Amino acid sequence: MIVNSKEEALKEPLSLYDFLISKEYDLSKIAIELNKQIVSKKDYENTILKDSDSLEIVWFVGGG
View (cartoon, one colour):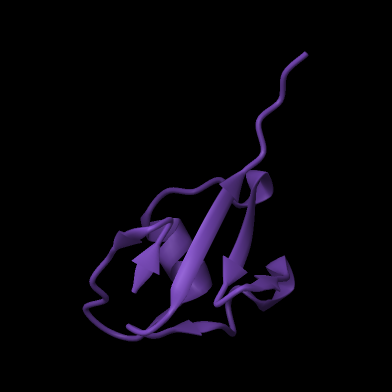
């Protein structure tokens, strides 16, 4: 699987939610694009990642 342009090995099938939690992402501050499609937060738990997937994770950063 490709995550933010870097290869990442999946040891077993994993939901998007479980992957993000295992990497300690703050789910309230990110947006996900999976295979060039935006994934709604409500779909994270039902979205199963595969080795052939391409995942882009975007962080929201405050500033002023």
